[in-house]
Image (tube, rainbow, N blue to C red):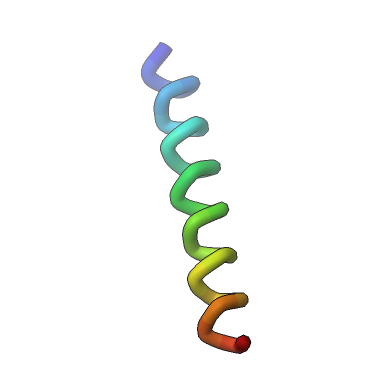
Length: 26
């Protein structure tokens, strides 16, 4: 269960990072 939660959190954070990076690049 902990592993699943970590994966979900990592995926969310990863998506957010990608969005932030693409926004910064414009």
